[in-house]
Picture 1 (cartoon, rainbow, N blue to C red):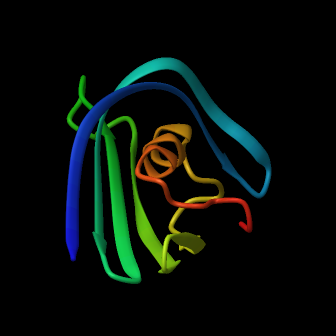
Picture 2 (cartoon, one colour):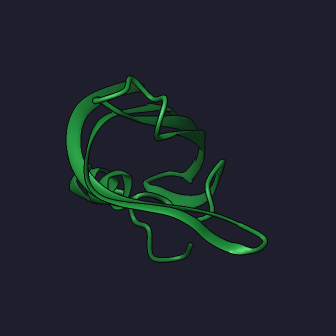
Picture 3 (tube, helix red, strand yellow):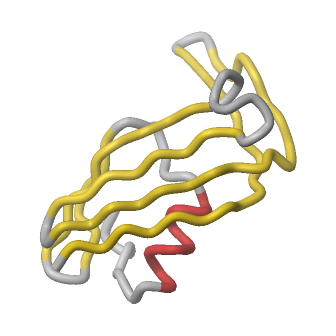
Length: 95
């Protein structure tokens, strides 16, 4: 069964590379989309103020039943993605 969830969130984000953190910003208004289709899914976030020019990320999600077993596209999942998956009763304990 396919789930498509879209919501807004406020989050602090940081951007980094092999040299360390290159940018940080607090209280960014984000548009967030999560799509789940059985054992595969995806997510996309972007800042509302610039339509994703300043902050944008997307990635994949992999599930076994109601357990998130892997993700890709970002170093760590944004808290708004983690919170929504937890709210939808997905287990994130084994990441």
